[in-house]
Length: 496
View 1: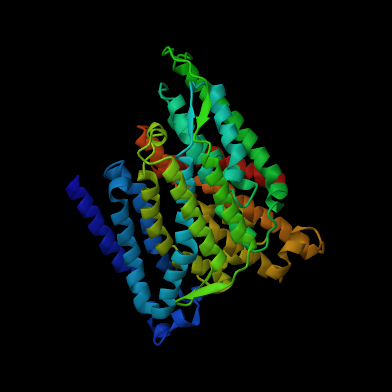
View 2: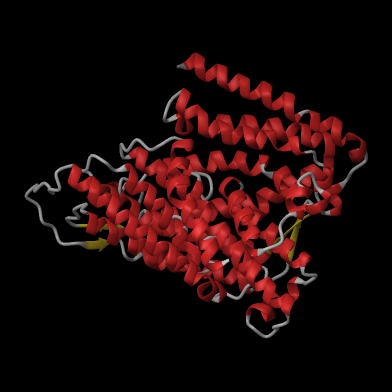
């Protein structure tokens, strides 16, 4: 096993360096004397060849394949090394080729995207881990369906991460006696970790980005509710049917262990800290306190305050429900899932830089053919959704948000007026249709892969920690392709 691991990691290094080092030759002519870090802008995506995304593809394939050929717990033990190798395989040639501009890109994605992303996940993960649902829960089809329904209903208000961390362990404990458990976790990821977060900017990161760029807070509640309700009802009914069939195959009998403890929730004071996180997020979207310049990257003070407040809320939760305390022990709380997400996504955010830059270049970039073909709402829905399945859905959403504005020759400053119904010309109404499609695609199709949305990865890690053998990267995609993709086709026909 050790030999296999060493061999695969060496192959990662060689392949990554051989393929990505050619970025240097491609960009060197344009980069001499570059001081982009001082001018505050990154590499023009039009300069980047399509093969500059190979390290990104490499890290995705590593996530998919290594657990299959080496060890199902590969990412837990070696995900950080694999992530670092691919990140360096991209970053070193990129910095050599584009110098200051490349430095700006790397600093920008970590300061603006990765660090706030991980802080928010850590805060929600920590606070939710201090809330324990006790009592005798029996994993019958009805009880399981109710848990998924509750999780879907609250995900837009406490975030998909908060709802996932709050309910995944009770779901697993309730079904400890069941033989078939994989489908429970997969449908949980579909609904609670993704689709349930459709209705507010608190629910999912792409909608939060929209909020920061002028989308009214409750616009998604009204605009996306029909889509969310439609697909959620179908998936919940389908889950109930599948779980009922599997339950009956296992005998259809709930074992009686002689206990009958009333259902109660302990650690509810953590809701205060959860509300503190929600308030911090809302504050960052409404306050305007100026910016600080960090090596050319402009970071808003209200965003720094938000991140500090989230950390404070998490530390207070740990103070009043300590890591070694009874509540967290009973909740089987550990840092392993969030550590795994932090390490793997650190590499993903690094290697995703050229993919996002090429997309932002639009018709001037290497994907000009793809960008030029996007015209109708259904096109925006599918391209945003498919890319959100593999790229980070937040910057993908923002890319096509700006693409839609540019297509219609609109400016971001009038977005609130358009979405509040104050401007009703043809191009304004068309923007509403396009933004609806972009929003639905980014949120819904984050469920297509383990990396489409961060809670997916965390739920998978917690399930495996509890002894559930989850499908591989491609095995999970088989479930999403068979179940979700046909539903997305129906959503397209009905709404778009």
